[in-house]
Image 1 (cartoon, rainbow, N blue to C red):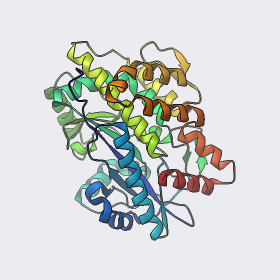
Image 2: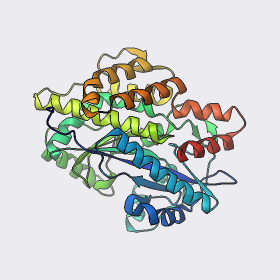
Image 3: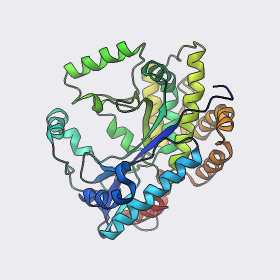
Length: 367
């Protein structure tokens, strides 16, 4: 990217759980919150596949500060809409206080096909993630950048781990959502693709095998978006705060720009053995920032914070070119000092019980 070329725009999709203000368990009333919030947010807020969840979206943005402002506004609107109905919204990958299993689903032919296809996997569908879209000139570039992104997915997960609780207990993992989500037939890191035609051939095979309801159920952690001219990075838990979400989004955009330059130079994507990438995912999901991570390039076990530091140092020139550097470094310093959402959820639990975790998350979410 030359100095005269503006950086690609990027946008964020955030998923939230709706919880009862008294029990703190997930409540099947997301539609009420969406209806109230849409008066201010319009189509930037919508329901999700379960009636326990809602999603907000930013418009395409040019800077990290703009993304943060959009996320902060949307969170305040949905939080107020929830409070008015005796509810709360929380940004977490999994619910600290368990709800009904299976979670109540929205109704429609696509949901019916999903139930028939995925069966018991839908019992674990009340999960919330953070998705970042970065503009791409075409699908071919999106796929090649995705190939280069694969080794970085574990460290991106390390930064955003925010789901330690499952079924009312501490899972021992920083991101239990990642472990649950990995059970889907098309999830986790994608294969390496050589062209859009190759991608379409793989997707057609998956459809023929009955592993997908449709192309929207391609749940790989990197994919070319079916709706937008973007590469979509889907590896993260929902972030506890708007600033953490904006930090992650800015790093993803910078990484995509950095790797797109490598694609333009004709550099091949690093070859990462599938078994090593799987182990790197597992360590990132288990430990988050509070332990060691696997360097997928070398296989070495290193402090997770060092892997994050390596990534950010690599991206310093791009962040400076975008005007995001100082803001991102400030956010990152606060995250490294205070810990990921998973660490902070556990700290809240030590003050009492899991209802305290939900209260903490509601405060963090609303900002």
